[in-house]
Length: 248
Image (cartoon, rainbow, N blue to C red):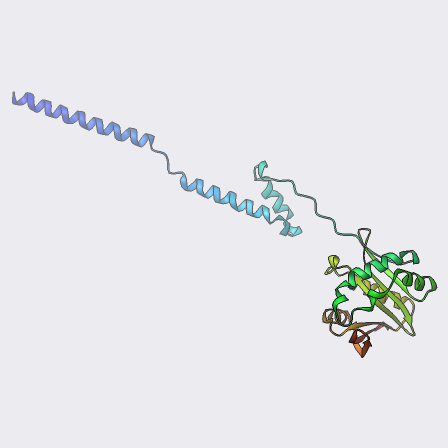
């Protein structure tokens, strides 16, 4: 009886051991392999490529070949068609003719409107298109108009005085400022003066309008005179600025 009991105990132990050994074997067979770290590194690599793709425009010409190799390694879905670069505005300056009197007058009024509330108001606001037409016709003065994509946005009037070209009423409508149009017109004036053998380019500006004073000084103009202009509506100090056009 004792032997039978011992045999049953041994058999039970063997069965239990076999059960655990089989479960352990199945567990390890079904356990996923440790590939998570490799997957993470692939995702980081993909992110790096995308960020490089965003800075393609910063690559130098010498990097074009490397850039092509990188793009070939990317899935086709990553490559996006590049939008066409925006073309720049076409800016032209031409000599005005008498028929442009209304355009010149309109540009001047729009540009000088801000000086209506100054003391004294700008005398430009008192001018008429008929008066401008008359001086253009009789040769008392000339003018140039600056166009942005075939739209007149700025102008300048000028005449020759002795050995200098004197320009005035330089006008850029407010919505087109800070684009360098005033400086382009001044350069155009200087070219006209040089072509006519003038020794200097000259203009006048209110002393209180320091932005204009600095612009002319940046272009090489120097203050050569100042005067107090007295009008019924008030007085204003005007500065005369001049730039030599003689060959250096």
